[in-house]
Image 1 (cartoon, one colour):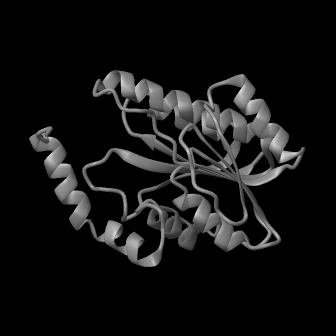
Image 2 (cartoon, rainbow, N blue to C red; image 1 turned 45 degrees about the vertical axis):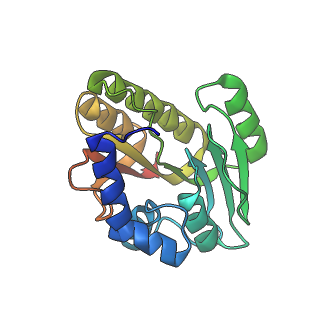
Amino acid sequence: MAVRSKSSAAWLNEHVHDPYVQMAQKDGYRARAAYKLLEINDKDRLLKPGTVVADLGSAPGSWSQIAAQLVGAQGRVFALDILPMAPLAGVDFIRGDFREDAVLAEFENLLGGRSLDLVICDMAPNMSGNAVTDQARSFYLAELALDFAAQHLKTGGDFLVKVFQGAGYQEYTAAMKTVFAQVQVRKPKASRNRSSEVYLLGRNKR
């Protein structure tokens, strides 16, 4: 039987006692991340009935759950992840690697030429433990998501993306400002205090 390291045991203990994990189980959400999107949406009103949204890095599906509930039958949710995601009512899902041109083309085909109102992206790379490498991988995914948003959002559309403060953060924020009229920082309460993650919100695509 494998022996857990102290760090993994500490993570498991924190996870089990995390109030957001317990709330997610009670409320029927697939992950604690649901409350990050709910808090941001309460403030910024991104998801409304009829909104057409793409969820990049969607598995296990908590953001897609929220989106599908809030956009209703008049809206559409298109989701993509390299990991499997159990089906959700009102969500069209493709499994594949967002970095691959063939997968991106398949996802764009699913959109059927629709312009999007909103792109949400909670993607993070598989962490190697090397901070420099992980930060670079994270911003590479964020850059791909920004490029996708720039191409597929309608004028006036919005983009919400997770990034990690550190190397590349200022440059990425500057790149977002060339696409959106406003770029705002959100740090929801459900983000763990020790995490350097923040969410950048691009409002009103030019």
